Image 1 (spheres, one colour):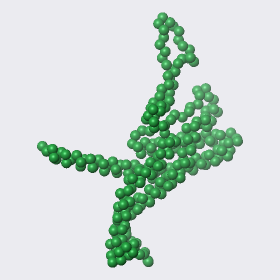
Image 2 (tube, one colour):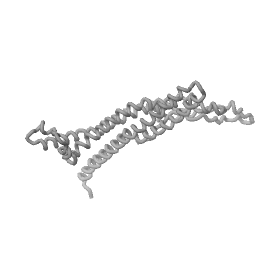
Image 3 (cartoon, rainbow, N blue to C red):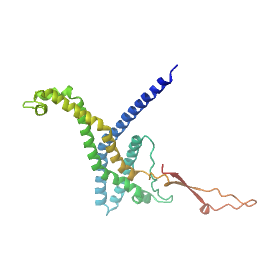
Image 4 (spheres, rainbow, N blue to C red):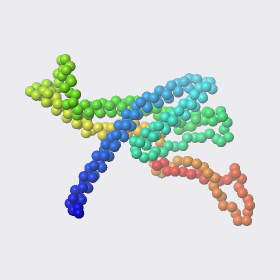
Length: 262
């Protein structure tokens, strides 16, 4: 049998293990979000900027409007990829506002150009343009922080190669001339440890900086009191007893179904 002291001793150990697992899981999510976000940002920025330039430049003719409509549909697909990445970052599903759909009796031409009237689609196209500079900064900072962390901690494995460079003078020569090699080793490893300790916090800040913009443009409001319209369905009106009157289809009441933004 386990004594009460042994049981209480295991509780902190499990808590520490869970905290460490959560820390490394969060670091992996944040790093994955920032590192994969930059190439996606470059691709989406190039696609949207090129499409807008061509579409607006030729909008005086019908082909330019069609090109803009196709671009907005493409922006919806790019936004969907970003929503999947946001779901992976937060570890839960995310919700978007519905896109405006064309009327049922709309003709082919109106259906083709209908994305131009959808404000959500324009926000999807705006996101890559605003996201590119943010992703560029976060990617550069993330790569630098990871390089300094790993480079400092792994200095004993690669630091010797610097002495093969003609004219190389290590930092230990200026810090501790009596023991330059030892001082250089301590300098790099302490610096790497400091960068490694702050790495989770920095990566969390970088991921949130990029995700904040995506949440504002691509997701539904996070206020639980905000409701998002999902469908309008005919209401089942109770029929009067002894009456065969049925409401006309065009006059039947409808029920607006909503879901919480969360």
